[in-house]
Length: 78
Image (cartoon, rainbow, N blue to C red):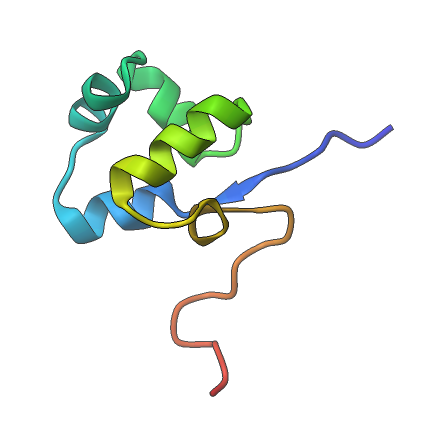
C-alpha cells in the first residue's frame, strides 16, 4: 500500500519572506526540525498544523499543500 504524500511550498514561502526554519517553528510552537521534515516531505502535518501554517503565511491551505506535485516555477502556462 503506497504511502500518502503531501506536497508543500513551505520552503518557497519562507524564502520569499526571509523567514528561517527556526523562526517559523517558534511561531508555530513546534521544533525547528519539524519544519525541515515537512519541507522534505518526510512528515505530513496534522490538519491543525496545516491550518496554522496557512494562517501564519496568510494564505489558504491549498496554496501551501497539495496531494499532487506543484508545477515548477516558470513552467506554468498562462
